[in-house]
Image (cartoon, rainbow, N blue to C red; front, side, top):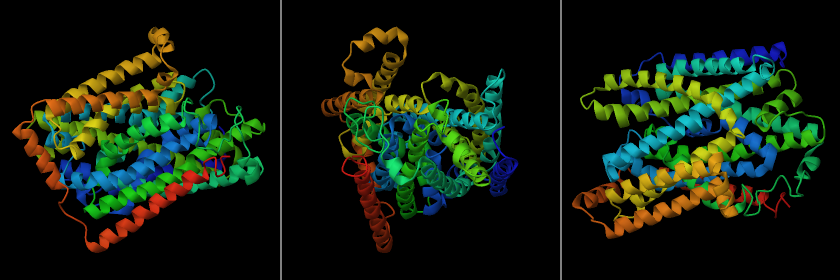
Length: 549
């Protein structure tokens, strides 16, 4: 065991405390599915923003993204800056329509704008992305952390102990999520956000001190002579400026503006003002992730080059540095926050998938189901999902790193949904037939790209492609370009029915529903402008014109 008794006690106390908090919040049982999955529509913006942050910046990032930063530098944190920008898009272009349509799930937009078939396809894609890139990944990341902390990652029974860690995490997170639903999840996320940010800042400070001070840290360079603190990489780099601008923005808009695990939190808001402000607050917190997730990964890499830290693999970098530089007591606090973040990922993904299956599939089959029926069957669905993901999680180890695995799932499934929702919002002549075909074409292209990039049987074909198409993010952009062409041509040249026109006009009218007051508008604009300015400053700071020179 790699922990002192005090640290272990703090971890256990926090672990029990956060689960107990969730169960305590769950003491007032929800009376129906909507109250269970949307927290009764009464959430305020600080809780929404914190939950948006905790849903994303959790065990996957602390394990996977810090591991990527350990290998390639601060550019790994560029995903967080793009995420902050996408939260601006969510507030500015999406939420007013979502709130006006009174959605229960984000794929419901596709039924109200296009057709039930489009909703089914998008809901299935959402499910796959959340199950594979959130829930299963969170269980994997959590098990990676636990096994490293307790020394279970070595020895003859390492594999069995990895499965044991997954079982412990799934049981703990499932307990209060199945009882209290989204309300319990959001309140627990708020507490966990405070601990996550605080522990990340502490680790960065102690890590910089261990590496020899800020001057020594900022001079750290990669093996090719580039600054590890620069967000700029050549276009042909796996995370170069071209794939980051094209591919990452596409998957960022899809993930932050259409995925159920994010949109579900905004839909729980008591008003449009709280939904939009929650998204902006989440954007501020996302910028913080650059410093509390990616930056410690870079510092860990420098400690390895100095010979003071041993990291067996990139996904262990964050936890390895924690156990190396943090003093007794503070180490327990930081690790408690990290383990609580694991619960946050699991509970968020579980609640989002449960609502998708309950409202987009079960409610369609049982059209006469009451709210109590939806609640009861929703809990059963969530339990089955949790068990399935616990079985799937260990196989993520077959990929070259957690964040690489996540990017394959995100980049190759996002394009058709990204295209159809933008056309649905901003191109009135978009048709249901065009959207349905675009979703099918984009999904098939995503599967083909995955086979080409990952399966040995296609290795020879992959090598014959231009270097541009060796990158999963670039494949995502090409897929998006093709989907946009299919959507436009079919909408422009196909039949534009009265039903297509009625649905387009209805969605357009919903953008004006429930406007904010003049005072709310003023506060919202101030926060939006402040976030935009801060984002530009951070981009400049980590550019070749700032510390990345």
